[in-house]
Amino acid sequence: MADNRLDMLGEVCPVPLLTTQKVISEMKSGDVLTVETDYSRTVRNIIKWCDDRGYVFDVEDKDNGVWLVTIEKK
Amino acid sequence: MKNGRTFKKRILSGYWPYWVGGVLLGVLNILLAALGKPWGITGNIAKWGLAVCKAAGGHPETWFYVWDEPLNLGLIDLLFSRGTVLNLGLIFGVMLAAVLAAEFRIKKVKSSRQLALGIAGGLLMGYGARLALGCNIGALVNGIASQSLHGWVFGLFLILGAWAGSMFMKYLVSKTGN
Image 1 (cartoon, rainbow over the protein chains, first blue to last red):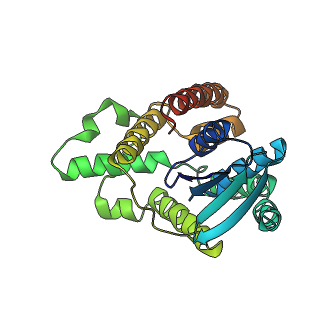
Image 2 (image 1 turned 120 degrees about the vertical axis):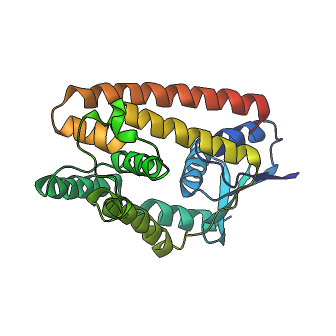
């Protein structure tokens, strides 16, 4: 199990979701990815995508307007 | 991994639904139209550009672009004009919403690439909006609301442009990963 981190600060839709999808597609099952974003719509996008695929996720408020989305690949 | 659910609840139901925003936009726009003319954003920004050009010694009033209305390009008059007040109100309102949602922060520029892309995108959007004589608000919403064909034409090409832009983004991400 590996931990990956993705810095998406300053990136707007659809780049964070597309990049997240790409990184996750290259990960192994059970690996964890943490995406850092400052765009609230990105959080919505990513958790909707996780829900559709049945991936477990967590969202943490890191700071005002900054979120950490942690996703575990199934 | 249990907080995800509560956050999801907040971010989906904590914000107003789209239809509330749409109705508010419609009602306020009717109010603005009754008080003179419907809402617009970029016309005022273009006037600022012309005013700065004039203040710097240029003669923008002779340009083809300003054929449609007589222009008052005095900086003080412009500052207290309807368009400037509406635009400053827009910025202030967005800031207020961000502060109330505890999402306000000054974003750092991460790279010169991001800065260059932002400036290039802004220039293209601004130039395009003035060629079309309006943005999403002035040309699309008000165009369609006033039964003008140009609103629908604007909308069609807006969708095409958004689709092409998304395809391009997808291609860039698949190539470089960012």
